[in-house]
Length: 306
Image 1: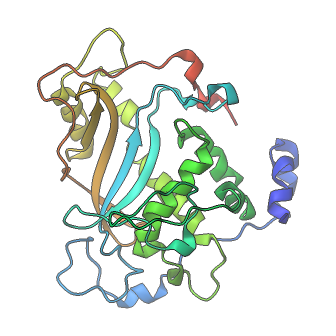
Image 2: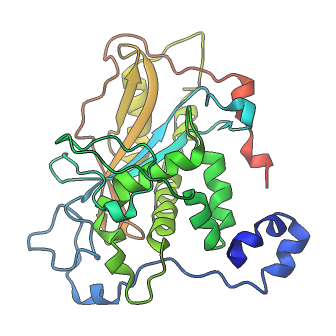
């Protein structure tokens, strides 16, 4: 066990954490981008020349999607796995190609998903059988990151860390700015994984979906429905672009939102430019759409927690 993992319990105690923080220096996880200063700058998918250094701009996955879920239960409430009250949850950060297509599970040496399934061509993706990705995050001493993820990056029907492993393995391994080579000769194993989770959270924080909708009087209800245009108009008024809205039950139950962007610079730290969705909504354009309430036993007010 590393010194960071061993200190995890102690750092959870505020008084001890304050003293220990002066003794433990957390390693950085950002990439080495010095070579990018010699490269031209542009928004991803809008370059007019070949990208020579793919650590500087996500390619070919330059259409970046920040995605969120609206779930009403986790299925693991009895284990204390609850949803954050008054907040949508983080789904992922995806690198679609500029034409809207996408690749997945691009590097099996960084595959941590225990149930990855198959590639589109039918080839079996080797399932992961090692330790949890949460232990990798703890190895870097990032208990703050684990704390946030356990509040807002919530799985449905399975443990949170399995969902996190899936998102990194399927999507981050296909994002060029998270390639191991981008971290230079001082790369530390799993540095890219921690960096990806940080980047996904930065993008997620740009889109407080619950608050944006509530500002326009659109709140979860089991008594009234809304029109698709109400959701779209509210979100577009705050982001400047039309996101994808996903619905189940024949297009009548709101379940997810995808925000589309091009990025100036890296996916980690670059400037995101909002774009209209290139994927048609699966929500009904005519029928009423349910934005269901959650039961009190499936959520908690994470703002009250340390």
